[in-house]
Length: 209
Image (tube, rainbow, N blue to C red; front, side, top):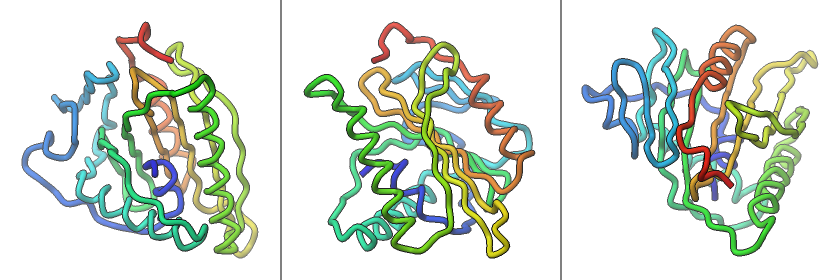
């Protein structure tokens, strides 16, 4: 099961483990002077100043908790796929950015789109199971000339005011399911993460699908 699906429901707080070597916090790619580059998808993104890098170990733990949540709510037996952590960073425990890739090759035209829709359905089913008051919406957004699927979840508190929200981007790119999750509590941190993603660059556009 994909990172995007399992993290979407693991709404917990954690403190990322600090490590001396930034490159040990990702499965693939490299971090140089606050800039991350992943050659597998040709992606470059600048990490916002003062934001902390989240270690891949922290993401791994969050993934597993998410899988357990999904399995319980949907009565399935999903196992974690070959997900590779890219760059993830946080302002604090309620405002963070997570990215990953997972190898994916379509066996037929439209398979990826079908998988995306199924994933969104799973998220909605789990939200219903846990009686979470939330709205969801889906659409598309073009980032640096590439069209991404965009799925948004907005949770509400007891006073029916927006509380915690997520924006989930996904794109089949260079043979990988590329996913970005922007999880936020307030609009100011949301905008910092959106700006970082929207200003990121891709140098292998000819290999997109």
